[in-house]
Each structure stands twice: as C-alpha cells, then as structure tokens.
View 1 (cartoon, one colour):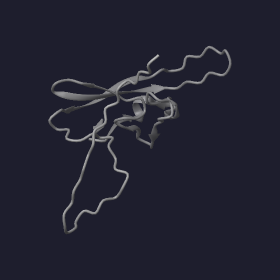
View 2 (view 1 turned 180 degrees about the vertical axis):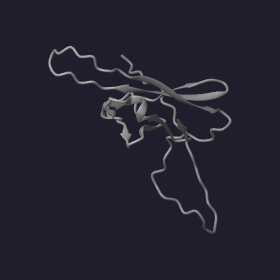
View 3 (view 1 turned 120 degrees about the vertical axis):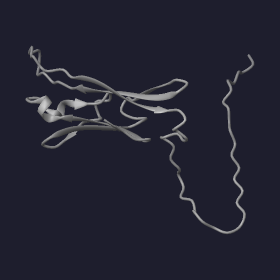
Length: 133
C-alpha cells in the first residue's frame, strides 16, 4: 500500500496470484484497471475516483476502495473462476490534512510580483426556491 495526499495505491505480488489473469482486476469502478509487470500487480486511484468512498471521524479521514475481479464466462457455461475481493484503505489524521486533495486551480498564477494584491472570495449557499402557487 502507498497513500499520498492525492492518491492511494495497492501492490500485489504476482506470485500470490499464480494462474490468475491480472487483466481481470479492477477497483470498484470496472474502468479502473490494474497495471502489472513480471513481479507485481498495481492498482492506483486518486482519492476521489474509481468508486473511492470516505468516512470522517473526529480524528481521521479514511478513504476506502476494493480490488475486484471481473470474470467473463461465455454464454451460460458454469465455470470455477476465481473471484477476488480485497478491501483496502488509507487513513489520514485530520490535523495532517490542510487542503482538499481534489482541489485544482484553473488558472496559472504569478508566484512573485511587486505591488498590492487584493483577493476577494465569495461563498454562495444554495437555498431551495419556492414558486408561489
């Protein structure tokens, strides 16, 4: 396992999955597929993708996902395909997170300049709108 402030990754030893096709492994979203080499199978996602969920407590924020197998059986053939379900998680102390890991800016900003800089930020709350009838 590797947890960063933006991603979570799980690394599986291929020798533990002998005879298993790594192309059938995904995260909760089947589009999030594994990559692999001769020794390891890797599944990686950002903290807000591939079906990742999170739970917040007073002390920590924990992100959850799961390695699954996608087995295809042609027609109505009964097979003994191996099924995989490996839950994994990354937990971060709440005091360690100082920003939203999915926040991205849409403009490039100058990092050094001379003069005065004024920044205004507005918060909008969406309220239900009722039509008089």
